[in-house]
Image (tube, rainbow, N blue to C red; front, side, top):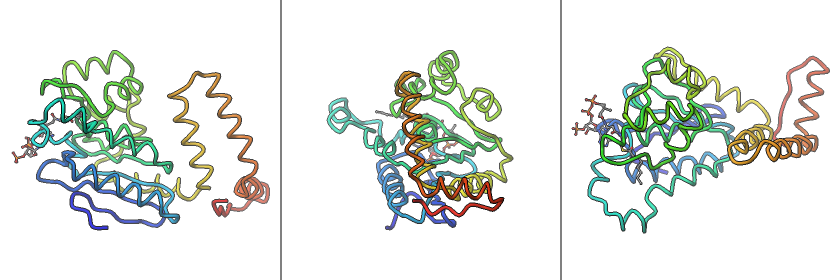
Length: 257
Ligand code: CO8
């Protein structure tokens, strides 16, 4: 499929999506929304792919929703279209998605990164929810996900003042899983993705599902869910292979069954 606002490629078992609207610092317009969601669905359906990476440019992961496209919207249009609800499709992607963030991840850009399963940041990354400076608020999950990542105090600070958080603060606060030197960002993200893709895909997907469940349910329900999924994993050929390989002191060869 031909995309206008992103580049896609496969690197072994990893699907790579590069946001590519340099003239607008990868601002998220309707075309980019359509393209990213289609690419995610294509990688999800591709049985050779075990992990997906979304990245941007050195200067910007994405500088937010496209303000110029949004500015003349009306309430009725936004309500009837359920503006930005199409991003809910990202939650249905069951393979892991890593955000590799360099430069600005602002507004919808920060929200897109947070909708991924984890964020690897370059030391130049800057995160923020500056919607307040435009007379609005986060609309793609920022007020909810940022609060879960960094806690109420910092989330309030970011949403109410619109200030940016640098990579070191983002790592300290639990927003990103690791920070790497700018020149090594893609390599490190692809290395992590490649590692994930080398494991049993059903086991990877069940791990993702269980961690995500912890955001939605009580601890006791989450523990019950984890235990049930854990029990079911003994039906996997890959569980037999993984544990046999350990006992036999050899590398496992998973076949996603
Ligand atoms: N939308 C549209 N165009 C943008 C955006 C954007 N978010 N960000 C940058 N651009 C454009 C600029 O207009 C400029 O275009 P041009 O050359 O034609 O003037 C080009 O990208 C380069 O940008 P700058 O010249 O501004 O570059 P600087 O290096 O000087 O500054 C900044 C970089 C600080 C990132 C600056 O561009 C900036 O502040 N951008 C806006 C950041 C922002 O406010 N983002 C939040 C947007 S709102 C949002 O995301 C809400 C999401 C949820 C909404 C849901 C509603 C239901």
